[in-house]
Length: 406
Image (cartoon, rainbow, N blue to C red; front, side, top):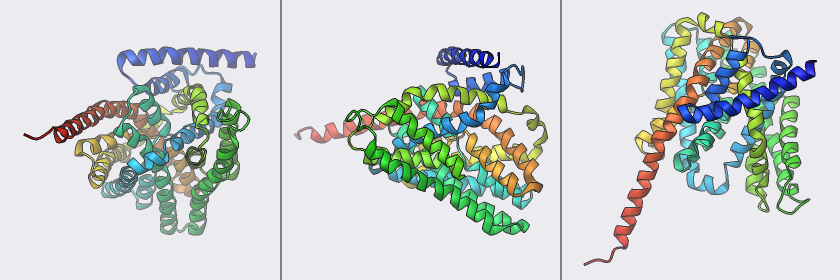
């Protein structure tokens, strides 16, 4: 009976996801937002009718789905993309992370939050939601410089965020008298271990995949890489996001005889992502919104302002149009699994701050994961005409130069 109920629930969720995808195109709302709201409706926040087996599958589903996303984002970091857009991606991503940490930490301290809590929440604010952002970009069907930069930024800004968060853990450990060495070692292992695991899987994967049928890696090969990467990352206690991203980047740049693993993963990514977003909505605890108070409201406002300012300043330093830089920051509003993971680590490390950290992070995730995809969609729509107009101006200038003189 339990198996039958589980299969029925999954079937209904898949069909509901298709209906929401269709509905989202009509009302111009990202399907990510609609799926999260569906999960909240069917899950404990409202009706609480999802089978326990479906809810329990989230522990396996989340790492698998996010590793797929990271793998595909790493595949977007091709050598040609890095040559053409690498400077912009690097500058903007660093700017967004640094400014987010500075503004959130400073603002929370000014309104009276404890310094340790302010620093930890500042580190958490640097995290984004690569799954939501990538899905909105794919659903929009838009490409060009803005979309390419956005995918590149969201692919690496969590790497900078994890490194910064590890440093802030060490600083807070010193402030509250905790174990500084332990916090630093954990952060370095999570980030550095993820990179090393990605290299360990990506390098042989780049050579070995696509050998059974020359140039045509199979779906089994692609799934094997993703599941192996996610499983080893969990077992070793390293970042599966970094491991997946590095694996994808290594394969796309070193496997010159094919690029099929990415096509194969893209084919089966959405069923995993659909369940992941529904489970994310089902896991939201609306009660946390009531207890966050002024600090929670300030955190949401400060992080939103920091994203826009970070995108604008990074775009300015990278030579992007000012409006495009601001829209980049707006498109990076979503916050999800990485932030929750950081919060869990911080709560475990500093038990006296655990309740506040978890309440603030979960409550802000509700806000940013519902409103964030809408802002990403808005930014894509507003930014793409800019890029197209820039290309038209460049084409006109080139034709004018080619015109014979009098």
